[in-house]
Image (tube, rainbow, N blue to C red; front, side):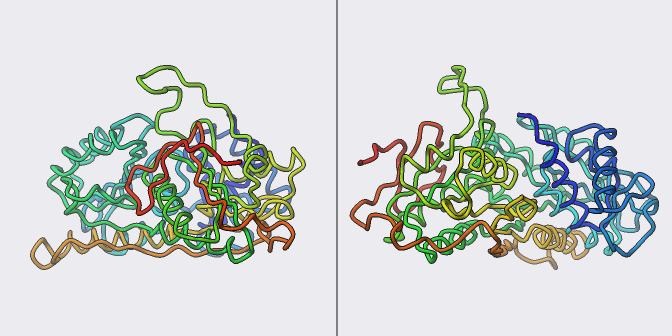
Length: 414
């Protein structure tokens, strides 16, 4: 599905506002569109008074700092750094993790390291040749967030990634307990707590039937899905919690069904899902899918938040919708900073002085905006006697066991 122009421009604004200034070439690479397309978007946004144009650069309104032509491109090698080169590897078109990269950058540069940023393509094992290339070029350390669309992709990377022989830190990734990567330093968000914030907020507003429309193509997505099933099952106030894929391409293997058979995933009809289960609220992961689903609700006459309260998960562009979305905001830049600090510690102190392996987990925040409101008393659920967690035809079961497992599908009791 081609991304709507306005949504792409909202993502440009989000990047510019979070960083102060961004080169057009960097935006084009992150959004996977041509430089000409981004330049045209920047011109229109500047004409509307939403940002400022520079020489090949988009700047936030009132942003201070270096002249536009002095804004560095993180992909462009600079002069040799005193501490050597550190490789950063992240998936392509992943604005969430790009924010983490921008958090890591000042820590590494302040410690005297030069950054070599590598963007991994959307293919299984796409990170490996980039890492091998970086190590052959002399990289002293590795900060990496593998894509890991499914458990098989993750397992396939364990062996070679554990054998890199340079200090390595995982960013926003938790390796399987007991795996070859269990002894790596890790910095990540506590996504269980993020989902807890979303559900607790909606329950506090009186909502009893809550839909989760989530991705299932990354470790973060799988953490969100598993946490939602566990938390909803443990809350007696929540009487139904159906789960569905948020978009046709949101699963671990688009276009493939069981046994490799072709599988054509239709776009989610969120309005129909809400009607089917009498749901009055939804948690939507991630931001782009959330904005598009809210647009689809409006087209079908479902008003947000009057008829459906919505909480987005990621908070990259959630605030920029026509209805600003209440969102769980993982500390993306702070995770990048923490991961970089772990790597600098390993590189500068050595294995003995650096001490034991560390796992840093940072708590997300809930940013309340205009997409949630208290449920009217006459609309509030049907009571605790109607509890049921439902898996839907496109739902992928949570990969990790939870205290109250919710198999999919479960017939819905009408």
